[in-house]
Length: 427
Ligand code: GUN
Ligand code: ZN
Image 1 (cartoon, rainbow, N blue to C red):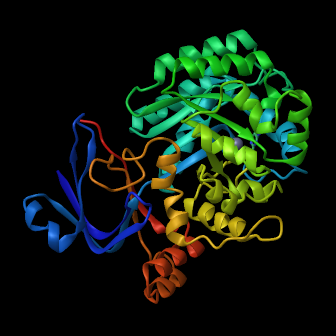
Image 2: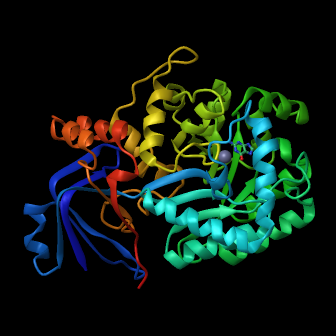
Image 3: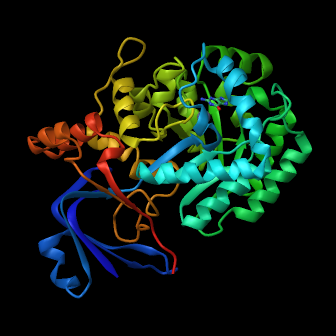
C-alpha cells in the first residue's frame, strides 16, 4: 500500500467535482492484484486509519484522475499541423500517404513508443485510438501499451474502397484480420479491441455489414468510426448510401450503433440523429481542436445535453493540434461558447474536466474502472503543479473558488502543469 497527501480532485456519481484541499489518496492491490484506489478524502479524517501506510507529501500539488482521450490516431502523430482546404483533401494529401508507412512494423513500433511517451507526458492514461489498416500497426501499439501497463483500446482500420494503394484493404481479409487481432488482444491485461471502420465512404456495404456482424458476436469489443464532421463528407456518404435516413443512420443500418460504439465529431446532426445516439447508447467523441483546425464546424453541446446522449472529449491528433487535455478542454470551451451557428453555452470548468475524465469513462463504458479516484478505480492519476508558470502561479493563487482554480488551469495550462503521471501497476 502507498499513500499521497496533496489536494485531491475527483467526481461523484452525478459528475459533481469533489475537492479536498488537504487530501489523502491511498492505493494498493485490488481483487486482481492491480493497484486500485483504496481510499480518497480529507487527510485529517483518513490519516489515522492509514497511519502505517508510507505517505508521499506533495504540498501545493493537485492529484487528479488521469485523463481519457476518447479519439486519437497514433499513426498521425507526425502529421499534426498539416494544413488543408478541409477534411477530404487533408486525408488525400497527408493522411493516407503517411499511414501507408505503417506497413513497416519497425516504423509502427517507433511511432507507438513515442506516442505512448507523449500520452503519459501529457497526463493521458487511457486512450481509444485508431491504428492503420495494417495489422502490424495494431500489434505494435498493443505491445507498447502492454509493456507499460497502459489502458488502451485500438483496432485495425477497415477501408476497402475510395482509398489509395498502400492503405486500402481487401473486404474478406480485413474482417479475418480484425477477428484474429481481437482474439489475440481483447481483454489481455488492460487492452481492448475496437472494430474500426474508418468512415462510411471508405467502406463497401459488405465491409460495414461484416464489421456489424463482428460487433454482434463480440459485444464486449468497442466500435469506433467518424461521422458528420464535414459538409462535403456528409454529401458523399449520403450519395453512397441513399437508402439510409442520414449519415449516422448508415452505421445503425449496419449494426454499428450500440453501447461501446464511439463516433468522432458528430457535428452536423439533426434531432433524429441525436435521438438515435441516445436510444442506442452510442457515444460521441468531441474533437474541438481538430474541428477548428480543419474548419469542420462546432459541436453542439447544448443539443447533446438536451438529447442526453453520451459525449466526451478527444484530441483527434493529427487533425487535432495537441495531445494536451488542457488544450482540448480550452478549445471545447470556445466551441461550446460559439453561438452563431447553434446555441452557445458557457460550460463550467468542472464539466469540461469531467468530460475528459469520469465522463469520458462513462462514454467508453469504463465508469468505476478509470477516470476517477473513487475507491475501486484503477490507480491512474496525475500530479499537477498549479504554479508551473509565473502567470499560472499568480492566477491560481488569486483563485477564490474551485471553479476559478480549474478555469485558470484550463485556460492557461498545458504539459508544464503535469508534474507526474502515475499508472496502475500489475502484481
Ligand atoms: N474521417 C475519416 N478518416 C479521418 C481521419 O483520419 N481524421 C478525421 N479527422 N476524420 C476522418
Ligand atoms: Zn479521427
